[in-house]
Amino acid sequence: MKLHEYQSKLIFAEYGVPIPKGSVAATASEAKQIAEELGGRVVVKSQVLVGGRGKAGGIRLAKSPAEAEELATQILSMEIKGLPVRKVLIDEAADIQHEIYLGITNDRAARRPVMMASSEGGVDIEEVARVTPEKIIRAHIDPLLGLQGYQARDIAAGIDLPRELWRSFGKIAEGLWQAYKQSDATLAEINPLVITHDNKLVAVDGKMVLDDSALFRHPELADKRDLDIEASAEIEARKYGLSFIKLDGDIGCMVNGAGLAMTSMDVIKFFGGEPANFLDIGGGANAEKVAAAFRIILSDPNIKAILINIFGGITRGDEVARGILAAMEEVKPDVPMVVRLVGTNAEEGRKLLADAKMITADTLADAAQKAVAAAKGETK
Image: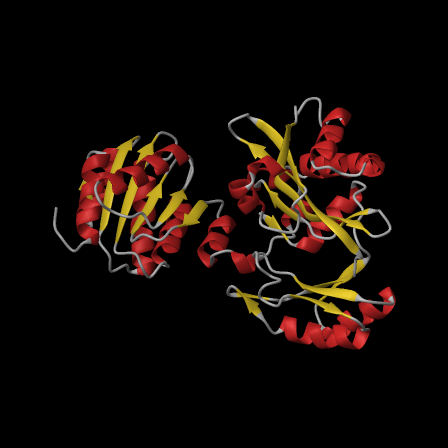
């Protein structure tokens, strides 16, 4: 789950990271009022969860409250990469001398978080890593010990930060680490962290990505989710406790168990097909949940066939079959469906489906081949 810039910076501030004075506005008149309260030059920044806001004209400098109102009117009417701008952040303009990158993310290879910094802030950090990797300084953080003082000093020295700023940089690095850890984030990023002309460090931009699996510990953060960037099917799936990710293929998948779902997608690809989604209905899905999953899959207009692969360990095969049949009555699909049922009450389930003239399969390979053929309009 991604957070907006203003949401990320407010979290950073809770842990002692200095941010510019500012507030968020949903209307141009609110933007003008905030600019008046700040009493000077301000930056009007679109709040959308995509990169390239500045190049798209979504970040503008205003020299007066009246200009802030005018710019907010323009920006609030924009769409950036297909996303509507619903809010703008009005920040006090920073007097920038130099820009730094500072961030923390998960290093899966090292199995621990890594803090990264670069003297080349304000630009695409991936491009810096590709062209001049020596300009990125890294420090892995032991999750039990946390960020150590010497690590922050090593990073400061590595990016040639003036020595008089090392102490404040250390506090910012520690604050960023605490924000990352306490929020169960997978990314916490300040880009840029600026050195002002009066020799202070300020986080003028911020970004956080949270671990969806940990949101049950943070209901206050879960409420900040921006639904504009999510497919409607993914929003609907979350209501029913389903794990769903939309993909670009034409073969819908309904599977119980994440590992089995991944395997089903791989086997579809192996036989020349393209999965349209990842959907795990879970281990104890009842007929109502299965029917909801079915409706979500069929909401995709690109679907040409559906593969249903269920192992009945906890989930009973006859319950799955009834859910499928109930959804068919409700949705009335016009695409072929291939069902593989094994495990508890699988025979009863297969009989129910066979009576409804559905395509069944005994093995995953057989099911995948039949689904690929059905998507191509062939018989298998």
